[in-house]
Amino acid sequence: MRLAGRRALVTGAGGGIGRSVVARLKNDGAVVAAADIELGAIEADAKICGDLTDTAYCDALPSKAAAALGGLDILVNNAGIMRRGDITHATDEDYALTMAVNVEAPFRLCRAAIPIMAENGGGAIVNTSSCWGVRPGPNHPLYVMSKAAIASLTQCLGRDHAHQNIRVNAVCPNEVDTPMLRTGFVQRGLHPETAIADLDATVPLGRIAQPSDIADVIVFLVSDEARYMCGALVEINGGKPVT
Ligand SMILES: NC(=O)c1ccc[n+]([C@@H]2O[C@H](COP(=O)([O-])OP(=O)(O)OC[C@H]3O[C@@H](n4cnc5c(N)ncnc54)[C@H](O)[C@@H]3O)[C@@H](O)[C@H]2O)c1
Image (cartoon, rainbow, N blue to C red; front, side, top):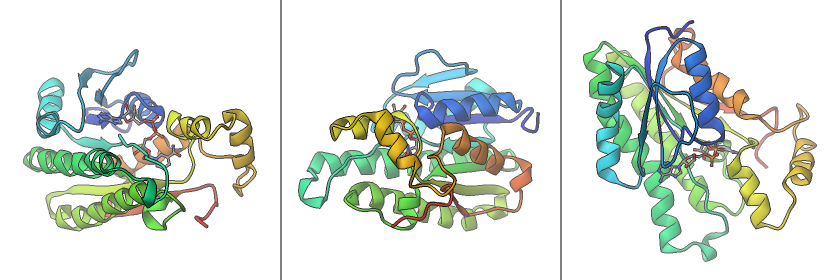
């Protein structure tokens, strides 16, 4: 119960990685406010549904979570979207939505959460970047750009708010078996199980990540075991580099 008494807000809590993060935070003793457009059945101490492209929803979310949980010690900016295709196929709407969900929302949530955490003596934030935020992968310039932006924001906030005992770090996964990955296969006319088996063979560890492989690192980063980590971009890739 290394997180007993901690109060956490998780965005994208209804998604593949988000569900696993909520379950693991609760398993370690935290109370959790889950946020997503839709949550369905999920075991959380508060559910705050809304759209992260709604700036007023973002700005108010940390204080709503703090009101529901009695404070806020942990923020996990996990929600994200991936628009596919090279730049000639990117619409204005693709650009605006990618930046709104993957960059502007975490900016707004960090901006609102940090004063709440500072007043309470500190806290921990984990942003979800990607290995493509550190080294670009092919044909996803909007997604890559957005994940590089959140990686950079993490490094900035990691140094700017350490003096307030607020640690800001990011996870940078390679491929994870979630709806985000599977819908991409379906869009390209591939059978998800076959496509995942093919991808497994490209990973030195022998398989792509499961959501729990990422959630465990996120929970480590918010725990006291990571007490000296600030502004780190933690790649979680099974040994598979971006090529
Ligand atoms: N799956 C991968 O291979 C992979 C790799 C690297 C990084 N990531 C990142 O991990 C994070 C989690 O992704 P996932 O793979 O679990 O995907 P997912 O699609 O299963 O989950 C993403 C969640 O974000 C929520 N979301 C999207 N737009 C929203 C909005 N406007 N308002 C509120 N919520 C919104 C969705 O409803 C969904 O529940 C994302 O930031 C993603 O970019 C995923």
